[in-house]
Length: 352
Image (spheres, rainbow, N blue to C red):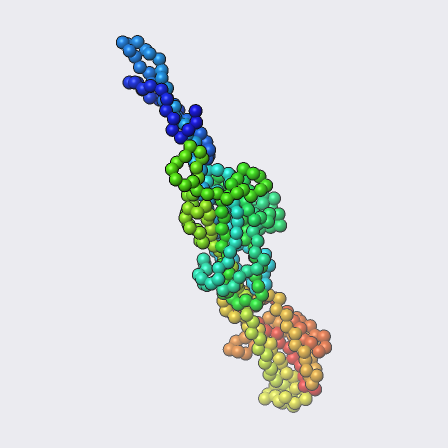
């Protein structure tokens, strides 16, 4: 017989034995499992054994809905303005005692504190969710991962990796923050390929059927015991902010040579283009410089020096030969300018 509590048989003076049920897992005994307990009673009358009388009790294990969404890595995702497919990583675990589906949503708050410091100040765009696939690099976002809106038939005690992927608008300054909040909600399972129906807690007294209890804790944007859980992560913009300064100095003239030279025809002028990258941001790479030489000047061949330094606001003569000249443009590329550093392009020309 099957019920929440059924007892049969007669009891007398005797020893009582019991039969245990299925061993428990970390998530607990599977919901809907019948657990039967049988007690046996043996007794004598006038010293003569009278046989065994038994009584049984059977009940069905109720369903505990529990889940956990966690940010993976506990660090912000640094991004440059204009980045596409920037990735934040989360983990979802079904801690329930039944296979379930889980609906997924991503929200972005308007302002407020960011998980890793600072304040939310912009929204990412083109936000989508991917499930990590065993076909690629496990734990890292790659093209083999699956675009999802829900998780189908997630086994108990099984953590999976989810990627929230978004595009970052252009034109943002260093330190700008975008918070993303991933929420998972439990839905009925056992229908592969289709998101199951909504789940409600069982109200009132315990029943003989498989009851449902929400056991989840509160998350980043959801309350406790609501069949959902959530976590938050953020994108932090880190960009290069470049400032360009151009200066010139007279090197020599045909009469004074290098002693107190003047800017007369035939004088040699040295130009310095200094590019400074503000502290606290990202390094700037492939910094391409173009400077057209005025028509009143004639470019001095092989005079370009790249990647030099500045001391006290004055350009040093320590760059490397490079760059090019295609009338009227002097060009050169500085490979890297670190945050807080200044690098230069220097060239010379004569006054016509």
